[in-house]
Length: 190
Image 1 (cartoon, rainbow, N blue to C red):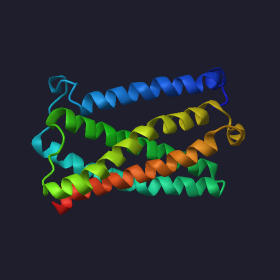
Image 2: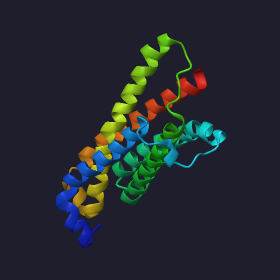
Image 3: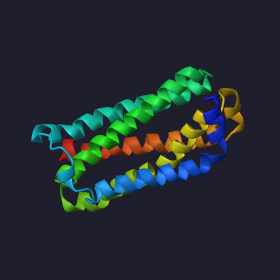
Image 4: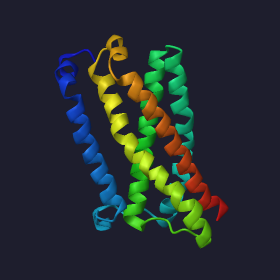
């Protein structure tokens, strides 16, 4: 963004990142912890609620393709392709999160159907790392998006965008991959 708005927001990217990250994470944890009254949300059919985890697995699988493709594009200096792929990854993450939080707000978290030994030694550690990486990734992704939106393309290499973007992409990818493992344990294996 080379217009006056991008230029005028440039000095506030760290503060905007903090505000947007805290806001996003408060909303996520409020929904995940049941602080959002389900009566405020429209009620989908049981079939729709049951389909959400499977749809989200597909959304996650797409993100597992778009994130590395975006990284590869920027390594090849294909800036427009990189931008399109990373914005697609962001849209996929947003869709995933909205569907997940809606389902959790309406129906609560999915119960673990397997044995307790697998729950404590495999499932919970995978879920914990997945959630931790997702939480860490949110401010990183917001930061790189704000940098990209407030600086001309030619200036981005002199910002923290390349460095933070590499870390964000890696953590984001691992978080999505662990999410797929959690899905497989909940809905395929057990």
